[in-house]
Length: 301
Ligand code: HMG
Ligand code: MG
Image (cartoon, rainbow, N blue to C red):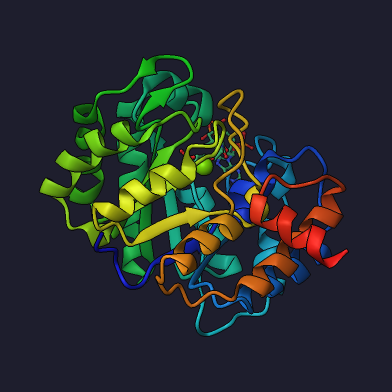
């Protein structure tokens, strides 16, 4: 099998990971933890979310976090931004990139951002154009690309329609989200076939949640299609509070074990990611789902 030689990982633990936690991690602890991630060799960190703090209380300190973290010049710092108000706050706190987001399915989009799919496009268009005008890169998250928790199976054509709209208004990358972690490899193939006929593989990021333990199999399938960008969260933190039952993102630690074992470079030091996972596991006071982390932990205690 011919795999890509280098994979770009975006660490989404501080955003997708913490947004789902009911306990509030103290800002200074978050900052120390993000600084550990910055030192791991990972190329991008989504450090927080500038959504309405009432919707995601765990990340209500996004601005303070953005101002306090130590910026490593080798890391690109991005944050989730739903609208112009969010972008304004994010620019003030400091970002290299803005991550906008919407869902393919009408019901999840409404539950997540209180708008229909059609109402969302003009909002994102404004954010993207404003972010590009100040030289920020923009990632467009497209959620529920395989299944919606409310509407069921999603057709790849529906996904392509949303991707076309977002690329047309200037996003640099699209991150395809298995929001509820339901996909199996044949669904990944059925989506990537038409997607990669239309867009360059370097523009596509895969974002797998690991609800049913399929994420690693889905990453392997994506690698076979030449995908070189993935989102993951340290320890397997994560989930979407507006998609019931969705578990954490695929664990960065497990992805590193897979990729490095396959001889694929990532630039990330596995031991530093283990330390970062243990740090946040300790702060949350619960065991995180990563298998590679559990194995490392057993060996070291
Ligand atoms: P809304 O209530 O419809 O907002 O919420 P609005 O535009 O009507 O404004 C209402 C009030 O909120 C106004 O204040 C605004 O100024 C304020 P007022 O005039 O009443 O005093 N407001 C804000 N304040 C701070 N920051 C802002 C902001 N925007 C408006 N950015 C909104 C709409 C989008 C804001 C809300 O629905 C929201 O915050 N939703 C976020 C939900 C969320 O974070 N979900 C999880 C992330 S998505 C995800 O996890 C999926 C992903 O990982 C990929 C995958 O897995 O598939 C990305
Ligand atoms: Mg997600």
